[in-house]
Image (tube, rainbow, N blue to C red):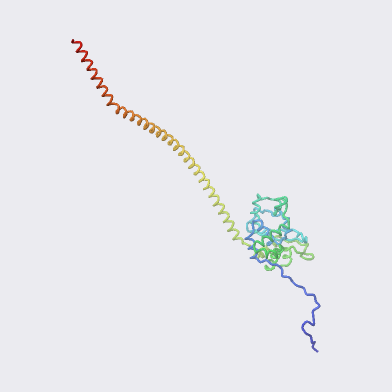
Length: 325
């Protein structure tokens, strides 16, 4: 006999669990974050997204743990293993050549150290102490917010970068499961934890997964390196040209200085000549004035001389007349 039930008469007594959708990152999200990052942030982003290491794992990572860092090939992934801080299970993974490329640039700014922490504190014991885990989280969260906005930034968790790495391993179909567990730092289960593995096994598995992890690719890296080398060569050439122009300018300034001195000397001579001319003009004017005055006085002088001559003649005539008498 069928049950005559209405809607709502029969409620399930089973506990209903709500599955929250976890925050996920895609390769394009990582690429966008990378374009907004400074060099230090790029290194943090790449090692977190491409190695599976947690913030705690990379906080204590040291330069000397990467042997031959400054000499290895530009397209070489570096196999590294360390016990995970959280579980103490050994994680064997790779530091990608993309990360190592940026890391070398970062360390170049510190003089290419061969030991010490890779990521150092920028506050306490600046440049010596290791970076704080909280600071790594803050840096990545700020980078995500800068890339996608403050609202989305509130949803971001740094561990989503490790999840991105795990997704790449799944997409690459890493087999056997034991190798994937090693790459993630999970327990291999039972007695398998006691068996060793070789670097080539880890490297081959990582290379197959790197297709889903790569940000720029080796060609882009080589192109960037070439561009950088060309830019450095151009800058060097421009610096030589600037120095040559600087020498030419100094030589020109020296010539101008000499010409200015010569012009000053010539100006002084001209001033003396001009002064002499003016003095000559003044003397000439005064001489002409005296001549004019003399010319004006000349008729009167001649008249006086004539009168004096006539008077003298009369005196002589008078004297001669008297002498005759």
